[in-house]
Image 1 (cartoon, rainbow, N blue to C red):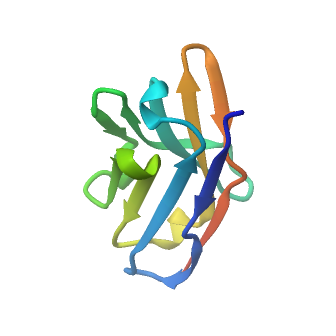
Image 2 (cartoon, rainbow, N blue to C red; image 1 turned 120 degrees about the horizontal axis):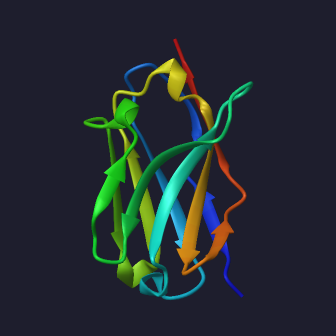
Length: 115
């Protein structure tokens, strides 16, 4: 059974950094890609970043040069390093992993950035 567990969220001040972790229950290279999405109050779920099986990364424009997605295959974990956090980054962050046409989601971790 595929499970994703996010961790690392919290309450921080503007300009701070956080690293989110997404630990998956199977070999991370079984997935075509793993990514992060976020859901802010009153907004639709938004793509944040993704890394595919070949290591290619992609980001939404609003986080480029601030966020970095990476993975540790030995730990079956994908990370999202978030720097220079802004209040508009406040959201629940979800990890999503895809195998062909199937998608798996974690339960989410709250990130709150105070001004």
